[in-house]
Length: 233
Image (cartoon, rainbow, N blue to C red; front, side, top):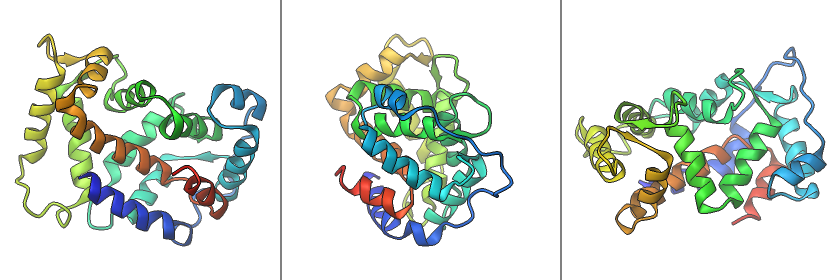
């Protein structure tokens, strides 16, 4: 799974700036970010890096915000043989911390800081939030099933020609059995982090990290920003 996604990401990052156009209409109300000094204090980026990131973000999103439809357009082009709409929906909700239907530069750079330079604990906390669809502080089996199925749907049948229809559910059953330590039917943040740090779960979490890390980077696609990202690896 991780190798397949990584290959797609490498192709994607090299050609994305030529593929994605007209993300937001110019009629959208413009948003200006908070002071870069404040963002520097809140993230793992320097002021200079934030300036580069903002120029790239502003170049591709003149209004200063990204909406859910933009996410869906990006992943539809990235995964033409699958249906990426639901995964893009869940991913957008994880970015949209204010739940107001738009992702500002501040939202984007805070998440990017975690995914590129955060600690393992910070990355796992962010991933937990993605899976916690209803934001009640727990992951239930249905939520995990929704995310995993969205990932399988996004990758498409050509990526997984040998998988049976019930493969996502089998995946979730194994994953959930390992994570639900006290067998109460839900996974807490502590259980999620503990499980992902255990040796038996490392391969699953590594694949998950590839999916989350690079799919999110996918929405930053100006030439200047891509060059910046390449320096991070």
